[in-house]
Image 1 (cartoon, helix red, strand yellow):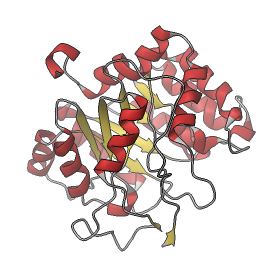
Image 2 (cartoon, rainbow, N blue to C red):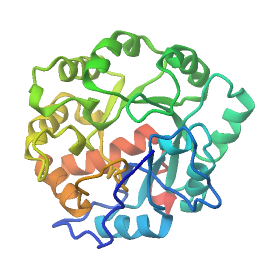
Image 3 (cartoon, one colour):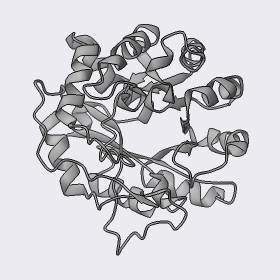
Length: 292
């Protein structure tokens, strides 16, 4: 249970702000730990990263909508994630939770009422649901209109791709498929991701600094992001990945990460699509006029 770095305390200062209705589709809330104890099965130990700190990041970037993603440090105890989603407000927030085969329909319905709209499988950080439950849980959540979100390494994604394409729910692929930039655009993991997108039902999150082989300023990620935007501009979304869990050497600056997105999508129409229109379609946000 190694310690990891806390997020930067300085408020990020990007060179641009997101348009009205912009959504951060991937971040986590940790703590308070006296109220939400850490799972003993976790693979790392983070600092407390609370709602007020996240709100400062969101305000700096122009984020008005958000998707709280269940982190591995809480296993299948989704209390922190769901409570945070409700505190942000269901007009503005959604949750992606972690369940297993023991989660019954009543529990799923209760989570749906609290903003849950997807189930995450995390095959990278540990303390998650085994991948052999993919098919069973996909069938269970299909009647709810939920999606399945997957975080895995690129090689594993290549192996899973045929199964994922056959699932009865949309699949959202975390962190640009977990590929390694050093493997290039023709690497088997990235090519598998492109094939999934070509099928018309998969989505991808462009929070991709984790795939960098060179490290900051993550310039080697740009060709992958642009290829994904070219392949499926209507099914790309973006997230901060705040508070950047499990890192122990370098902590990204959220303003700089937002500027990376601006470089990948330099025109206003593409930025609006990635930050506003696509998240509204995937997560079921109300029209801007109705959200207030």
